[in-house]
Length: 184
Image (cartoon, rainbow, N blue to C red; front, side):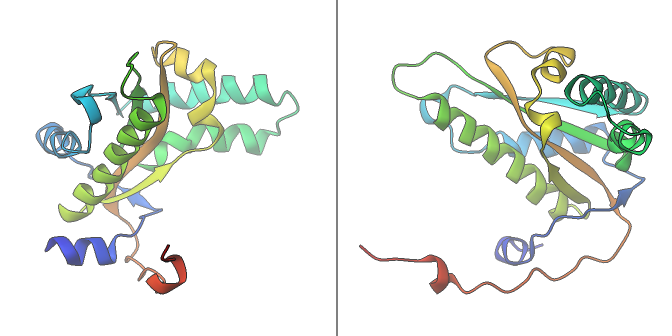
């Protein structure tokens, strides 16, 4: 896929299934994500690949966190939380791994990790996979971060769900660049 065509047509695939990328393809995808802007070459990111039965364990971690956050959660909410990681054959947690730096503030490091997530989306689509970037409470809950082995200086910028698209891609809605540009 041509780069400009990919950028013009990038779209999240909300429904994906088997097959997902194999190990070699995952390494290729993550290798591409490593090419993002990185002020100071701090490499303020890392990736946690969750596949197979590990997705079930992640679902249980989500349920434990939900019950802590919302003791009155309904059975349907608990089931939805438990099943969330099963919506794709591969889930990649993109982690901002922040460094103390007098030159590079934490926000720049987090933005670099966000660029990694976006590059994973683009690369997956370029290789014919569907992907979606999911965030929400499960990205920001410190008990989930701890359960996944993150340190105090790390946080999840999102989960990238990757697999084979189950539905045709919708055309992204047209946006007029002039609506978002101001000149100073």
